Each structure stands twice: as C-alpha cells, then as structure tokens.
Length: 203
Image (cartoon, rainbow, N blue to C red; front, side, top):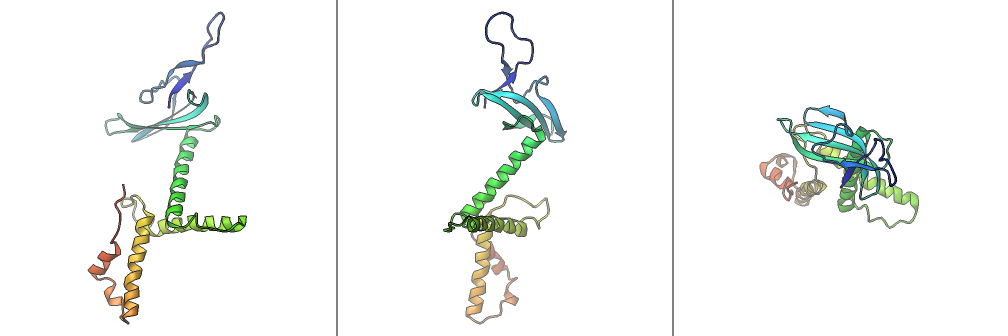
C-alpha cells in the first residue's frame, strides 16, 4: 500500500496546483512530524496519522504498529487503515482485530457447522440457523480452549474438535453394542490415544 504524507505547509507561490503530498511514508522509519505515537508498551509501538493513499485516491486514518524485538528494533510492521477519519488509532486497530476474529468464526461455521446448509426462505429462520451455527463454534472454543491456562492456549481447530468427539463416540458405540461396561476402560492409555487420532497440525 503506497501511502504519502499530507502537505500541511504553505502552498507554492504563483500559478499551478497547490502541493498535496509531502513525501512517501516509510513504515519502518515514520516521520514524527506526521505520525504520532498513540500507544507504547514493551514489545510494540503504535502510531496514528491521517495520510493519503494513492490506490484509493483519498485520505485514510492509519494505525501503524511496530512489533519490536528484545533490542528494540522493528521486527514486523502491521498497517491498519480506515476511511473514517474521526476514529482513534487504537479504535482502528481494535476494529481490525475483531474483524479477523469474525472471519475465522464464519470460516469454521461454513466448513464444519453447516452455515450454508440452511434451505429456509424465511428471514427469521435463516437468522436462527446462522446464529446457531456460529454459536456452536463459540461453544466448542469455550469448552476446549478457554479452560486451558493462558500459557497453553494456542491455535484453535474446529476440525480437531470434531475428530475428537467422533473418536469418543465410536468406542461408546462398540461398548454399547457388545454389552460391555465402559467406565473401567475409559482412562486406558490406548483409549486416550484413539481420542486424538486424526488431529491435524495447526500452523
């Protein structure tokens, strides 16, 4: 994304169009005269500014975040932008974060919870089906992710959760079909091994 600083100084004398740009934005070395620090904590620094975007041909409110290493050098840069110039830099970053959480929620609901399988035409029933599919993803995440400690929380895969429930269901069906009591065998190491069979590695 090609971003430019806005020209805020006096215009050129004489005939011709007034100055609009004041140089390109170097995201790793921002100009403190245009980009101001809105949040700084150990590990990251966030800037905010209203800049010009050549691709969109309009002004954007930009939240520029530097992820820092232990030496304080820029390790990675993230750019979040909005056409609403009244938003604060922190609010722009929060909106982007929530937006991607919603996208992952809908991705898992479409892929594993039948979000697109509804054949109703009534708007109320379609909304109910949509809410039920996305709520199922949230419940699965709450049961299998939030009960872990913060240090153990990693990437979340609804596919692995489905596989684990299926692997737990099949031994129960076998025990029921053969008339066996499953309680003494549920904690057997081999039963616990089959519970995680089919788990996929999460990038």
